[in-house]
Image (cartoon, rainbow, N blue to C red; front, side, top):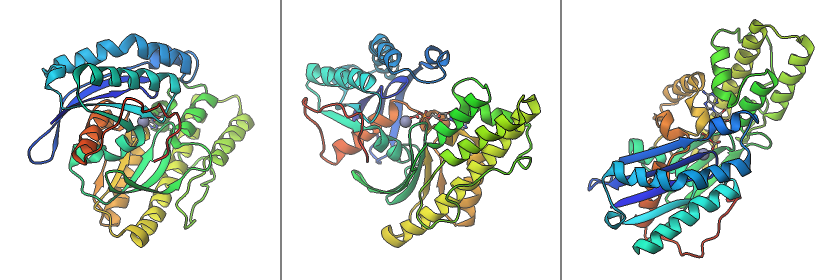
Length: 340
Ligand code: KG4
Ligand code: ZN
């Protein structure tokens, strides 16, 4: 089975072809991603209108390239999958409409994919992880702990009550005058900073419910930066290091709480899976690796290129859903909000 996947929910225009092998694993035949970071950088964040127009400009070329690099024609496909949300409505419409049009023209089944489900299932494509598992999804828009029990069987066991982790990284970067997107910049600064110089709050630490709250930490950084301004290069590095250390402590503690809830309600997870753009952060990767070893749990982190938004995760989710006998009609409407 071969499926084309299309992703346009945020600022990446992406398409990929994934093939299901006879042993049940997946092979990525092609994966094309065009990031629009340059278009949005001047505004310090993603501008929905600019994103939608860029998707319109790029989508034909990206789909063409994904098919060419995979060496397949539309007629060779067994299905077409497109992300139908959650995300920025303009972009979602572009990808969803393109997917439907290709399905209609080729007579192939169509799958409308939930972008979060795609992040959740990526570890089965990259590492063949078995159900059930605990997923920590940490991106610019989402911070959630999810019990993944099967295709279409997800229970959210924890979420953020305010900012997403990536959003907190981006906002802290902006306060410190670092360019967008802020996460990688904060990580770079933190490498030569002192994480013990500033004692920042660790919200929700020790709570049994595996929820997150990051706005208090973000505000503490803002007040600190205002108090010691003007900031030297070393001040910026030390603030970044102290902030990142607080985030690491919060994530480890919240995942530990999530494991407790998982074991009580869903049995023993086969793995802890970490996905989303923030999973590219090395300090976070190292801390969660230690947590995995300490709790005797297999830790799976897809490579950064598949943690951030891409078409392969959409194609793979299409394969999983088609295998489970699920497909969607041409009347499937875009869903800017679509909780798992
Ligand atoms: O999953 P993603 O590519 O897009 C969505 O939000 O869906 O995640 C992007 C987020 C941004 O907030 C970015 O700052 C953050 O992931 N990020 C990082 C790092 N790389 C990307 N945060 C911390 N450290 C990093 N190395
Ligand atoms: Zn995403």
